[in-house]
Image (cartoon, rainbow, N blue to C red):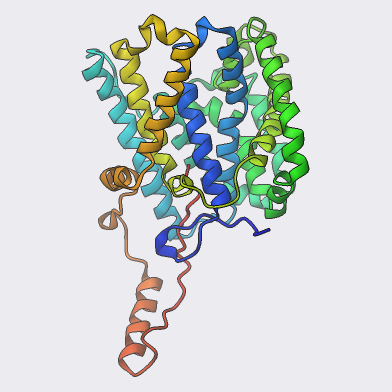
Length: 379
C-alpha cells in the first residue's frame, strides 16, 4: 500500500497521491450538492436528514486534508508568498465579486462589500489563512488537539466574538485542521482497510436514520459552526457539549467517507487539483438560481426533481474543476504577482552559482534543490 504523499503541482515534479485527489473531488461534489439542496430541503424530511449527515463530514474531511498537507508550513518567504497569492488574494477578489454579483443579478444596489464579513463561501479562505499562519504554534505545543478543542468550546459560549472574519467558524472548525496537522500517513492507512469499509456501511445507515429522526428535534445551524450557543437560544453549557458531540460524530463519518475513497487513478482523479476552483465558482451558479427563482418550480421539490438538482450540481462543479476553467481563472486563484514581492537574495545567489557552474564546465543538467517547495494543500 503506497504511503499518502502531498499532492504535488506539475512544477514540483513529484507524483500526486490519487487517494487525496479523489477525496477532495468527492468532498467538493458533496459540498455543491449540499448547497443545491438548501432551497429544497424544507419540503422533504428525508432530504433534510441526508443533508444533515452530509454536513456532518464534508467540510471536516476537507479541513483535515488541508491540515495534513500544512504540516511543513513555516514562515519561509516562499511559503508566505504562496499563502498570500493562493489564499489571501483569492479571498479579496471573491469577497468583492460575490456582492457585486448580487447587485447585478439580484438587482440589489444596497449590497455592501466588506472584507471583514466573509460572504457565503469565502469564510473558508479566511479560516485557511489564519490556520496556516498558526501552524508553527500547533507544531510547537505539546497538546495541540486538546487546546484547539478548548478554543472551539470557548468560542461556542462567546457570542461577543461577532461576525468579523467569521471567527466563530474559524475557531469551531479549528480542531479538524489541528487534527490534520497531527495525523501521519499510517492513520489514513487504518481507515482504508477492508474491515473499515465494511463497518462504514451500517454506520452510515445508522447516521441516516438518526439524521431523519433529528430533523424536527435539532437546529441545523449546529452543523454550520457559525453561532454561539446563546445565539441559538439554548443554555450556554450546550455549546461545549455540542462541540464535542459534533467533533466525535464528524470524525466517525469522515473516517467512513475516507474508507470508501478510491485509492487508484480514476477519470476524476485529476480534478482533485482544481477543487478550490469548483468550490469558489459553483457558488455563483447556486446564488444565480436563488436570485432568479430557478428552485421555485414545484417539480424540483419532488423526489425526481431533487435527484435532478443533485445531478446538475455534481456535473456543474465537476466542470468547474477542469483544466480549461483553471486556465481561465488562474489569474484570480493562483496569481504569480512577482511584481509585489522582493527578490529572495538566497535564491538569486543559488541561481547565480548554478549559472556560473554551468558556464565553467559543470553539469548544466544538474540543478540545486530549492527550499521553496510550493504548498499544495488546496481545497
